[in-house]
Each structure stands twice: as C-alpha cells, then as structure tokens.
Image (tube, rainbow, N blue to C red):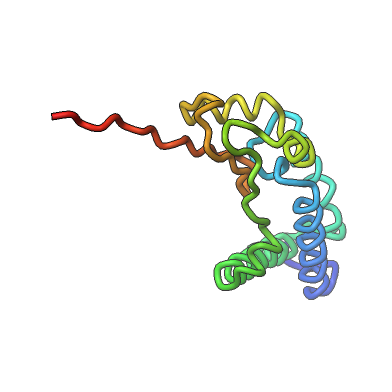
Length: 161
C-alpha cells in the first residue's frame, strides 16, 4: 500500500513537469479558459485531469505515490502564489494583465474576438453592471476572464436656490 514502484524523486519530477506544462497551456489558451466555465469548458478540464493522471503517477497506485504527487502539486502552487505576490513581473507573466476592451460606449470587436469573448458575455456584463452601452465609460477583460464595466459618472444638475 505504501511501497513505491518508482523512486520518490520521479513523482516530484513528473508532478513538476505536468504542472508547468498545464500552466503554460492554460495561460496560452486565453482568458476564457480560466474565466466563467461553460459546460464544454468543464468537460475539457475534466478530460485534461484524466489525461494527466496517468503521467503523474507513472502507473503507481500506492498511497505513498499519491501523497507525493499531491504534496508536489500543492507545493508548486504555493511557490507560484508566493512568486506572484512578490513580483509584478512574475504576476503579469503567469496570470496576465487587465485588458481594455471598450471605451465610451463602444467595444473593440477585434480585441474581443482575439480573446474569445462572445457577444452574450458582453451583454451579460452590461446587465450585471446595470449599464446601458451608451453609459459605459470603460470595459475591461480581467485576468480571470470576466468582463468588468465602468459606468460614466452622471452629472447632477446644479442646485438652484
């Protein structure tokens, strides 16, 4: 049950390789991958998990191997969190940066298409912000794939005494 079929360091190496590869692939696939999941996105994530599991364990189904793999993945995640919290450059590299996708009541269609943002996502973000298109001052694509809308400040008429 606890006896490993492979050397302990191989599990750490396998976990590190899979973690780094998936981090790069998810980052390269765009913000939509890490934003709000559609049912299709969820299926893809589950299949990636299933596909990576054999490579992580190398066929070893012992408790010790599983603990080494889980510990490695959690440790790597802590290292990434530590690095991104201390370096703006590392944060931008691993997590991306906020992107302006609209201004003054107009969305930038080419930017939205490049980042796989649908018209339905745009309309939903406007509704969530309780903002009509003409009242939008800025629209941003956040690093997590969500859209945030900034409304124009309404001008109040001067109080006449």
